Structure formats: structure tokens, C-alpha cells
Length: 299
Ligand SMILES: Cc1cc2nc3c(=O)[nH]c(=O)nc-3n(C[C@H](O)[C@H](O)[C@H](O)COP(=O)(O)OP(=O)(O)OC[C@H]3O[C@@H](n4cnc5c(N)ncnc54)[C@H](O)[C@@H]3O)c2cc1C
Image (tube, rainbow, N blue to C red; front, side, top):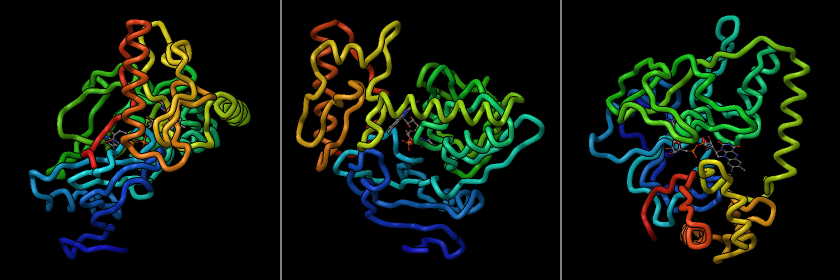
């Protein structure tokens, strides 16, 4: 355990001025004023109860959908990955997982148990908490149709159990009660065949590595697909593949990915994102909506 403890009863790890570049898949981002990795859920509840009510909070999974600006985040980051990571089978056809569990682990755990429906999660390089916040999906599957219930936590440390009916859920968009974050979920799956589930995971991962720049730091799909079209198609048709600002480049392999070719700043990425959005709008009259979440302050 490193760092200072505000309360000697806390068992997690508290860091100050912690650079966030190492916590995001783009490998960019300035420091968080504080970053807390709880020991477990009880520890997180205690930490939140102690926190100043005005302290800005950012929950962070694997940072695979997050552009943290170069000036960092003036508040407290709650890092769930590697912390809230309990996972178990629940009843005949369910999986209970805490929000810091990697999506890939959930897919593999389900497949090994002969449960099908979560294979698409295998290639999503985030946590369950991020997948719930984003309604992450791929190859026809989406997170929320699997959800039986979620457990949430508010900043006063209060726990609640909620069902999908408490949320407005759409493509890559989830709105629910203000001031609550996802602590865990129970997913409902179907009975299936172990070998078939594992083969489907292998085939989805192969399709992904054939079409996406999986070896380069990125934030995944930069923009949501507009109704009836694909952001990648519009960006490619606008002639923007390979366009670069500093170390940020529109991927040659998948036009909706902005990759960090080395040494990119968050500012490079944000400027490139804006230029792509403006150029697509100028040429096709479609204003793309970012899928990635941008947080923090300019340097
Ligand atoms: C190479 C690559 C491929 C990708 N492919 C896909 C894909 O196929 N489909 C897809 O949907 N996405 C894809 N993504 C995007 C990303 O992986 C997903 O959006 C993922 O769900 C984000 O999870 P995360 O844990 O990394 O979230 P983070 O990036 O850490 O956070 C994303 C948002 O969720 C919030 N959040 C995180 N945890 C919680 C919590 N416990 N409670 C409440 N809010 C929380 C954060 O505050 C932030 O606003 C891809 C990304 C990359 C880099």
C-alpha cells in the first residue's frame, strides 16, 4: 500500500498528483489531484463517507473510452480496475460481477461455465463499470440487455439495487439517477455449449484484430455511428484516413479510430477529433457525436 491515508481505518491505496496517462488506453492525460484504489466495497463506502461533499469525483475503469486532458483532473479519481473485481456464477444462468472486473474475464468465465450471450464482451478492453456506463456493445450484442440488476453507490456511501427500468438506455448511452455509480451487476445469460461459446470468442477476437488497430494506443471508436450510417465510412469518404496532428493520427486501418503514434498529447487528439468532426460536417452535413468521454482541464 502506497500513499497517504486521510483516515487510518482505510485499507486502499491513495495517491496524489498521479499521472493518468498510465491509466488510459490512449496513454495520454495529466495528473489527478488524488487517486484512490479501494481495497474492497466496504473500504470504498468508508472512503466516500469521508470525502468533502464538494470534491469532484471521476470513476475510472480501464480508461479505454476516456480522453483525459493534459492539465489533468482536479478532483479524486476512483480506480475500480484491480480493486472491485469479485466475480462468481449466480444461480443457474447468472453471473455476478463487481464493476472493476474486465469485460474479457466476464466473457471467459461465462463461456467456461457453458453460459452464452456475453461473448461479445471478450474484445471490449474495459471494465464492467465502463460497459454499464456506456452500454458497450459489439457484433450485435449490448451490455444492458444482459442486466438483471445493478448495485449502485452514491457519494454518501449509500448502496442501492436498481433494475434496467430505472435507466434510459440507448445505443452507447445510459442515463439514470444522478450522483450514483455502478458497483456491481447481475447478468442473465442463456444455457449453451462450452466449446461453441469459446469458439465464438476466438472468432470475434480474430475479426477485431483484422479490422481494428489493436496494437496501437487508441480510445476505440471516436464517434458514435450516426443513424443509418457508419462514422468510419463518413471519415474515410471525407479523405481523412492518415490525417495527423502531432502524435495523433486517424488510423489507416479503421477510420473511426484516432491512434497515438507516439508522443501524442491529449490536445493533439482533441484537436484532431474536432477537425475530423468539422470536415465530415462540411462535406456531408452530418455532425458526428463523440463516443469517447473527455474530462479534465487544458494544460
Ligand atoms: C481498442 C478498443 C476497442 C474498443 N471496442 C469497443 C467495442 O467494440 N464496443 C464498445 O462499446 N466500446 C469499445 N471500446 C470503448 C471502451 O472499451 C468501452 O466504452 C468500455 O466500456 C469502457 O470501459 P472502461 O472500463 O475502460 O471505462 P473508462 O474509459 O474507464 O470510463 C468510461 C466512462 O464510464 C465511466 N465509468 C467507469 N466506471 C464506472 C462505474 N463503475 N460507474 C459509473 N461510471 C463509470 C467513466 O467515468 C467514464 O465516463 C473500445 C476501446 C478500445 C481502446
